[in-house]
Length: 161
Image (cartoon, rainbow, N blue to C red):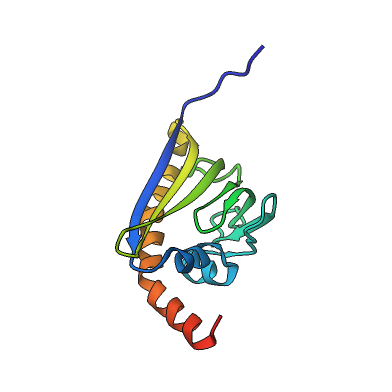
């Protein structure tokens, strides 16, 4: 007997970042820099690594997402599970059990194309608020990443790291 797969919906956000792929990779996989443009975390880009994203608490939810790295292809792709929520998060879908995938592609001009996919949101009405908030948030974090990249690159150049 096979388990029936429920239909899901996905978020896709894309942008071009005017920096080389190695620098963008660092910004999306270095815990210290992720905390500056996204959320506090303890990510290590290593297969199987378990880590936590820390957002602001909402109602009775502590603001934490539990994650585990599923795939790492240096300077190309990182994916991880993304789970969190609380049973009393009304209008926000209660719990999410999803997957995030970051894919980097070099552009001909030396810039980097960034694609963020957040997969596996169920189709229930209870998940609508979460899906909408996360969709808007995905676009926002890419704008923030783009805005902060010049500062990161300048810092890396002055510290030679």
